[in-house]
Each structure stands twice: as C-alpha cells, then as structure tokens.
Image (tube, rainbow, N blue to C red; front, side):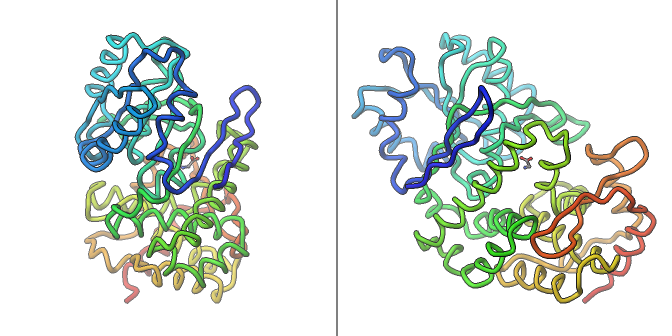
Amino acid sequence: MAVIDVALAGRAYDVTIEAGLLDRIGEWATDYLPAPDRKVPFVADTNTHRIFAERVDKALNSAGHTADWFVVEPGEGAKSWAVLERLTDWLLALGVTRSDRVFALGGGVVGDLTGFACAVMKRGCGFVQIPTTLLAQVDSSVGGKTAINTGAGKNLIGAFHQPSAVLIDPLVLNTLPDRDMRAGYAEVIKYGALGDIGFFEWLEKNAADVLAREPVALSHAIATSIRAKAKIVAEDERETTGVRALLNLGHTFGHALEAETGFSDRLLHGEAVALGMVLAARYSARREEMTAVDADRVETAIAASGLRSKITELQMRCNGERLVDHMRHDKKMESDHLPFLLLKGIGAAYMARNVALSDVAAFLDAELERA
Ligand code: GLY
C-alpha cells in the first residue's frame, strides 16, 4: 500500500494506492459518511457500473451501507450542462449536504463531471475519486481540476475543487482495454520526460511489465507518477506560477491533433499527448535545446509501448498552418502568443514563451512528410 499526501494548506488529502481496495470500499464510506443511515451517492458510467457496481454494493452492504447510483453514458458527452443539471438535481433530491462525500467511480469524464457538480453543490460539497482508468489514476483524479465541455470547447467551464480523497485500486485496470491502458501510459511517460530522468530510464526498461499490469511494476509506475503530480500541484494549485503548466507537456501539439481528428476515437487524449510529446521533443531538438539523441529516446519510448509516434500514422489531410490554427484556439493561448512546453533534455521541461507559430507550422509541415 502507498499513501501519497497532496499537501495543500486547508485542503490536504491522501491518495491511497492499494490492490483490492475496491472490495473494502465500505470501510472508506464509513470514514466519509456524516451519518451512518445515509445512502452513499455513487456516480458511474454504464461501463463502470456494469463491471464494478455489484462488488461495490457488496462491499458497502457488508459495512452496513447502501449505494445510490447515478449512471451516465460513457464518453465526453456526459460532461455537459444537461447531465450536470440532472446530477445536481439528483444530489439535491438526495439531500446531500456540504459535509457529505459523493463518490466518483470511473475515468476522467466521471471524475470531472462529479467534481464540478460537487464544486457548485451548495457552494461546495466533498467528493472522493475512485479512478478506474490508468489515465484517471495518474492524472485527472489528482489535483482538483473539474470541468464540463460546451460547444465552444472542452473543459472551458469548470472549477478547481480538490477531492477529499483519491482511492486507487490498481486491480481495476485488469478489465481496462489495452488501448486505454496504453493511452494512460503516455501520461506516465510524461512524468519521466518532464521532470525525472531516473523514472524515464526505469520506464524504458519496464514498460512491458507496466502495460501487462504486473502488480509490482504497475504500482510503482502509478505511485511515482502521483508523487510527481502531487508535488507539482502542492507548489502551484491554480496553475499561476508556471510550475503546474509543466504537466501540459505534449498537450499543445496534442490538442491540435485532437482538434484535427475531431476529438474522436481516431485519437484518444493520451494518444494525442504521446504524439505531442514526440513533437515537443523533436521541436526542442530543432531549436537545438535538446540533443537529437534524446529526442529519439522519447520517440522510441513512445513507440515501444505500442503508441503511435509519427503524425503520418494519423493520415490527416492538413498542413502545419492548419494545425497551428487549432493551437490558436487553445485555452492556454495568451493575448498574442502561446506558451510552449519544450525540453532542454529528458527530465527537463520548461515553458518557452518565444516560440513563433510560423516556425511551428514549418516544423509540422516537415513532420507531416516524415515516414
Ligand atoms: N492534467 C493537467 C493538470 O492536472 O494540471
């Protein structure tokens, strides 16, 4: 078992990583329920409900509790005003108070939606994240970013609202499709690439074991990732000093690729981040800020995990200017420029503020030809 403290004054919480935790969720509910006769509000999507609800119900019942379930359709469509309205109405009807904890059982969509609903529920009630994808375990469940999407873009309406606890059972990943496992793994590599060369080297040797869900390797990868994220969040909770922005390594390029592929199953978010990290590394090498050898290492680590590492593999019909145009709509765009996360080496990400978008477009034109 590993317990990682997210050290935020007044809002500190633990991330607990423990194999089999889901079957002991009743004990956690007891800790987080204000009154034992209350039902425990659980939000899930139809997939996590189908796979885990029976076990959760059994674990809760054996501790004397009952779950009340709010189940949404899987996918980004659930992060909408309409679903938020239904969820908040449901929580109000349940009589949820500020000191209650709402449990979010699922991936990033369920976590983001539930977190945002709890941020606005009676001006803020508690919630507990039980992430069921690797991506949610190592990234979205920790750090308090919550949001829904609107027609204008993804995650544009949201709040920073920290969970009361994050409960991670690595065994739940045994039912995660391999593609989603790999997509989450991209965010794991990100922690090595952005700030920890030792972890990056460990991943170069142990990727296959992590992806095969070998328990010791997997728990180490999850715990190391969360430790890195917890440290960054504790330093810069609201992304104001530039420290938390380091977590966006690969995201600016990745966002453009997601936009060009229609935010669809053609390219999952983690897959876009993987390609975006390769592009950030190669662009850093083009600017002679990191060596071509290190940029190749980033690409090799991504490709070795079965993720696409060249944008030609996406078979997009576009040019660099069009991809840069997507970046101009990125919410990180400042008044006249876009800060870029680049690398001075593996484990040494930094925010470049002097990037000319015309140069990025020329670079992407070359990448779109690279076989
Ligand atoms: N996923 C990036 C962050 O939490 O800041």
